[in-house]
Length: 279
Ligand code: NAP
Image (cartoon, rainbow, N blue to C red; front, side, top):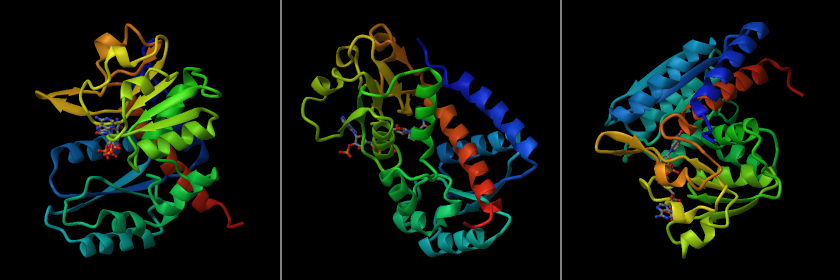
């Protein structure tokens, strides 16, 4: 079975548009783009397009490639204090001279629609409500929508990054999976991945996951977005693995579109939380 993230995303965006209109709110998302990396610029454009589609107002703050950490922090301060802004997304990666952790920490947790702020990460660790990182959240939506059982399943996550691998492992654990996290120092990766009922690959290594690494019938989620000879491909050797797996996400058209849906959902949730009276 192909897990069609694109089709699911289109349906979720339609529902979100309806919900935003029925609630009579206009959430506002601010994106912060530093430098002139074409891939980052493209991702930001896609996010703005999705905002237009669902009725979220969006503004883009652009800073030059040579911007300093304090210049980025100044802009974030303005966005944090602007009552019109519900959510702030800083497009990563930032140019190397910028202190990325400091920038992430500077976004007000209630406007952190990426779920990267340490306070929101802490909420995830504690199993408390809060914005979840967009890509892992989108993957959980795919698993739920396609009825992939997580409870009791052995989930193996390749990758331990703060934006994907770690929050993914935590969300799977909160969904009652037994989770193994693998990374570049893992010994005999294939022996571990072959045990997975659910295999999530977020390594950023083209076609690293081959058919012999996958248990027959497993659900395979490919997070990788790698550009090879001008073509987008995932971490998974799709042709070969799809003949072994029970279900698999394609690249493109799998996880990517669902990441954007999660961002839209988090922005609406941030706007609604700000409307609610403090408890
Ligand atoms: P990252 O920060 O570079 O992390 C990669 C992780 O994979 C690290 O934990 C690394 O281990 C591990 N790894 C690398 N090579 C490995 C190998 N040969 N065997 C086992 N583990 C290995 O990347 P990221 O931000 O998590 O992103 C991962 C991929 O997902 C990238 O291709 C990225 O473009 C893509 N992505 C896609 C979306 C989407 O919406 N589709 C969103 C975010 C990211 P160490 O920790 O030991 O270095």
